[in-house]
Image (cartoon, rainbow, N blue to C red; front, side, top):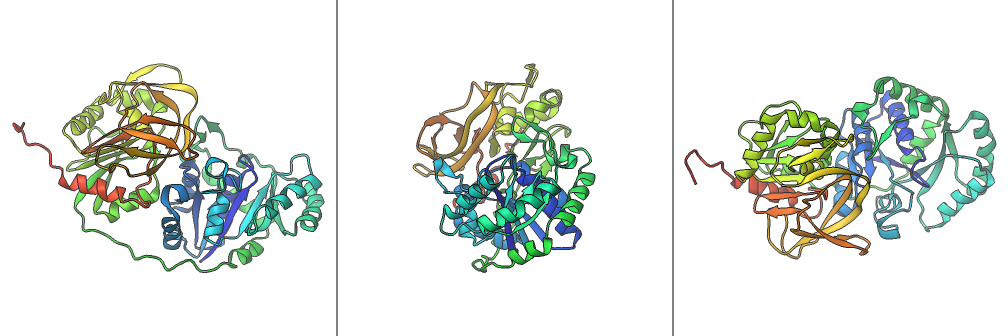
Length: 452
């Protein structure tokens, strides 16, 4: 399997749009290309997935561990894997390089193309790139693509960068209207919300074909060592059905988390809390992922039959995982961006409201004193938080500790059949969280009428 990573010196360099254009160009050439995203981001993989029609997968060393990252890449890399980095190239956990884009590239022996925005510098830019290349003995840097760069600036910078850094400049992407993606409080709009996605994809792909040396990119991508042999799929016989909320309001799921549930014997029944009237028939578990329920608070509230169906299911003990946006949906009320509050499911007594800033952002480890559906006493479970909405009913079942060790707090609700809180979990990592969820769902049976 050939593979390449696109990384940058910092966020905002245009990794997503350059990756988007590169994937479109490779797809149009007929290459069996697959996409991956370093880190815990949910939104960038949506662009990859919509473009290719194949699930994009996260490669997160903190949430998954090295073995699972390599397994994901080996299983799903196709003929060519394109990895999109996160943040700055070396930016990892707690001011270290751990779990950074570089760490992923280094552990998977993946060559890296640096996406560089020239700005107002030339030789200084070369100094920055050279410093980046020399910062670690095996930087994995193999080339440069200039982004938001005019043809004239490209001609000026190319010889300077190649002479001073020793890296080939593989082409450029000029400033383009199609490359401008609006943002909101959690980052870019989702791919499904981008107008003219198909037209934009075609324009970006055609531009990359014209101004990036794709043949050279493919040559670099082939200079890789084989990954370890992929582990065979383990698939338990179907033993339960888990309802998974998936629509515009609830769209944050890791592809490997859903796959891990299926391997654990769960059949997934997708439904929409916005449009469906009740949970699917015959389900034994409920998965409410993150997303943007605050943007759809009125519509979610107006669907009172779904709110009632979910309330009855969780009250009856149906095994449930509710993360971040799903957790907000289970509160008594939820505020929209205009500060108007709407009734929600009401399983918890809190009020969800906007804070105007990120809350408890970053990697954390979770641990609890009591055994519950997903957690065992003393076990350290990696997780991630990223939200601008909060609630006055956060729970206290678990202790969350920042991965840097600087800060801790109590959070979440857990029980024999419950995990609900702001931290996002990866169900396909080192711990058998998917199997534990499926175990609980397989055991659960709804009470018959008249039973206590």
